[in-house]
Length: 64
Image (cartoon, rainbow, N blue to C red; front, side, top):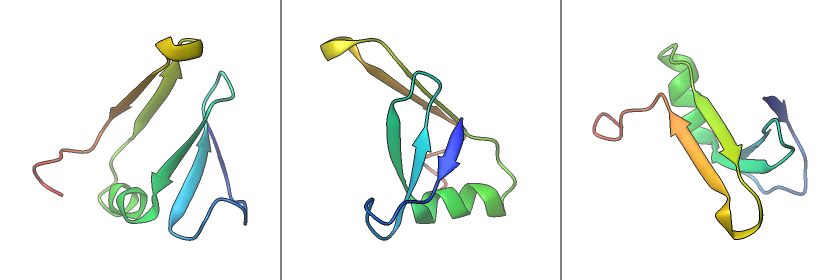
């Protein structure tokens, strides 16, 4: 996973490029929360065409 910072993305988001080169725009507050709490995030994209899938692990939605 490669994290990049581009001006064209929009303020408040972090662009994460997954292994198959599919960009994922992740809300900056959630990314900061994971870093602050020392949590590992797993962000994975897979598939092609309309069968694409996003997998996000590491944040408990009930504790946010």
